[in-house]
Length: 341
Ligand code: 13P
Image 1 (tube, rainbow, N blue to C red):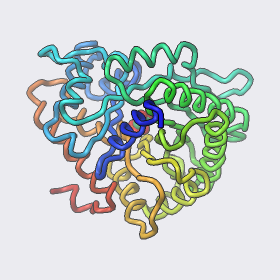
Image 2: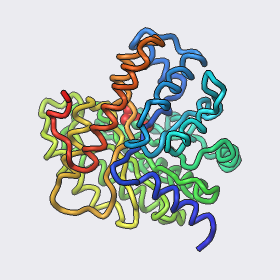
Image 3: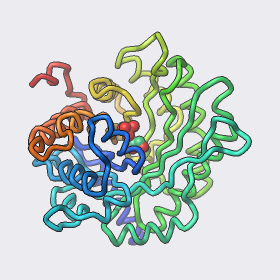
C-alpha cells in the first residue's frame, strides 16, 4: 500500500470516528457577512476570527466533532493569543479541513443552472493548504430543481468537476469530501427530490469511477431527500429517512466509508431528527451516516453570541448542545426531549 493511501485512510478513520461528525465553518466572505447581518454584526477580518476562535475553542467539542471545514482566510488566521487556528483545532482533537472550490458561476447556455469553478491551479493550492495543516477538503456543487431543471448537462458538468477535484485531492494526500447539493428551494415534492437526487448521485459516482477516484478514501456530503421548502406537504423524519436511504442504497457503493449530510436550510431540530431516523433504522447500512452541518450547528450560536465577547460562554454552550444532540442522532439515540436537557 502506498504511503499516500495510508495517509488518506488514517484521515478517513479519524473523520468517521464513532459518535462524531463534521462542523462546516467554511462560509465564504459573502455568506458569513449574511449570517452576521442576521445578528447585527459587521463582518471584518477580526470579527470573523473572533467568531471562529469562539467556535473552535468550545470546551469538549472534540468529543462530538471529528473535523472542521474552514474557509481559506481562517486556515491562515491566528487566535487573539497568536495560535494558528488549525493548531487550535488539532489541540482540541479535531482535524482541520478546507473548502477549495471557488464558488459557482452560471452555466453558459443553461439559464438558471450553475457549475462550480476552481479546478485551475487546484493542485498547487492544495499543497499550500496541506502545509498549513489541512488534511481534507470540500467542493460543493449545486443542483436546482424547477420547471425543466435540472438538465442532464448541468448534472454532468457538475459531476465531472467534482470527480476531477476528488482525484486531485487524493493525489495531494487530502481526503475529498464530495458535496453534490440538491437545493431545497421550490415547491417540489419528496418524490421529485428523490428522483433528482438519484440521478445526480448516479452521475457523480459514474464520474468518480471514470476519474479513478479511490472510493475508500473519500466522503460523500449529500443533501437529504426532503420536499422543497415551499411544498405544502411536509413529511416525517421516518419518511425522510426512508426516501434518503432508498436513494443512497441505489447509488452509493458500499466502498464509500462515510456519508456526512449537509443541513441545507433545515431547522436545527429537523436536521437532527432526520439524521436520527436514518440511524435508528433497524437495517444496517454499509456506510457511517453522520453530519457535516453548517447552519444546523451554528444558527443558535450566532443568536447567543451577537458579536459580544461577554456572550462567549453561552454561545459555546449552544454549540456544545447542538453537537451533542447530533452525535446522539448519528448513533440513533436522539429524542426530542433531549432538546430541553
Ligand atoms: P449547511 O449545513 O448550512 O447546508 O452547510 C453545509 C455546507 O458546508 C454547505 O456547503
